[in-house]
Length: 458
Ligand code: SF4
Image (cartoon, rainbow, N blue to C red):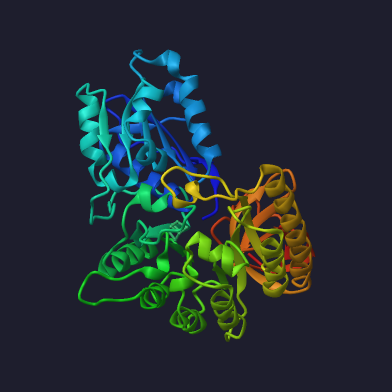
């Protein structure tokens, strides 16, 4: 999953008669962003209203990510800044992956924290709030022993056009570098019935794009008697009237089966984009990572996608400098980039994380070497992207309008194949185009985005 720090855009307030306020900052992947939307919904239902800054809030929450050390450090730095506010009526809580990973140690490291809650315990979040309000200053939700998923009718979505739906939580894989199985617990799939009801409800409210979420959506297994697999669920969600785009993330190559490509080929509402994290181009490194596929097996999936009826954009994640990665292994990753020609990728230096098997591995790659490899990889990918994006010049693409760059006088659109396409459009008389689907002719391209002109008359 791609990482970003995402301070929330919308502020929510039911009818706040209690004067209770909260501030929530989210770190990490889309799963965390969507968990926060559900946490906000629960808070608002319990009479809290959302404020812009931690200074204004009674309850300050950080929904954390522990995939990389940096995000974790950021959270503790934020907490440190408010140490002086301890005992002044402000309550602090740590949610998500760092909460699960560090557990009660957080109370030692930041004694002004009162709530520590991992994502597998969000179903009890409402109860925990009641305990906090009763004055309890050591409230925890750290059990991973759950078969439940965090479903709530009170989700407060940040975007009025594009909505996330979590279909599976947790992960049963055990990739050697990854903390997720430890922080999010075992896989739990929602019933197809509840996912479909949510999708239909969103369409009725005017959402036109849905993104199905899970640590590994491909291993979705409907626990109800219908027994749908991921390909079936994907196809059915795409058939919901009013839904024009369906995306999904993240995939695991081992569970990415041919039926998913068939489902995509036969339903144009499923976006022309597949994010298929490879992590390394070397089968030796993949085995050390415990990724459960070889380079050849991964390439078979790429071949399915490249020989499909539709043209799909392909993106991936790569880790450089995993313990034992030699120059020759790294070369194989570079060759893989040449072979696949990804449209974009997220690349990271391997970072040792607690509770992972890679932590004990020998043959560590020095940091300078990891940095060198990362730069070479990124430079190569940049050249590929410049070339790939230039191929779009002259074409007319449909975009969902997501925003506006006032300073540039441009609208921000996203294509079905997940490219950002900034475009000019005749004066609208102050009318917003956000949420509309428009046709845009691509006139220029760069390494990370396209530029164009609207050809739709509004
Ligand atoms: S599939 Fe691997 S990398 Fe992805 S969440 Fe599970 S353990 Fe982590």
